[in-house]
Length: 252
Image (cartoon, rainbow, N blue to C red; front, side):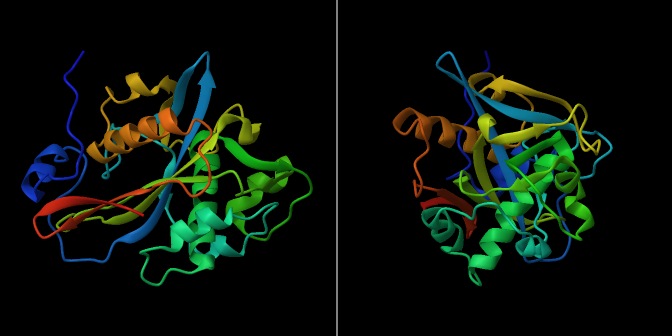
């Protein structure tokens, strides 16, 4: 087995650039990071934790061929989608913390974007079965399946801001949910964003060809599950960001 890789905090910008050279295009003009959300779906079997991951197609410019969780850029319009249940207040407060223009609507959009991306990329609909309607073309899969999106079981696991000097920069919130929260599982996802989608033990997932930040967040998740197997609301959220020339870690 390969030697464990270091967490991204305390890496210099040059060290992180070298570690991520395969998946991130360097260069470009300075830009503000865009909100993004990703969902870590967890399954517990016989005392072990599994996570859902898939490989990005090699044709992608951003992180080609890397294993990732379902996720993508946040659509502010998602904040207007009706839900069966909202975010737990403790989770909403964490999502708003240290967010600049943080609002409840922004937190809601981030959370709903994670659910939408999980449907689009993995064919899994998280929520409650029941009548649901919306004019948004991005949520018609939920309408057709009769699933109301639900946010109350989502847990905020980590946050990471892409360092400067990348062609694409994101302020990514890593959220988690349980496999039991999936109301409908489609035979095939509606898009081909991910391939080789499957459930992997965390110990095996960290050995895949994954971004350094993903490996770090998996380590954070594993440690949290050891002390809080149920992922209680309002738990500690590591926040990774570049300060000067070094990546730092704070707890929200």
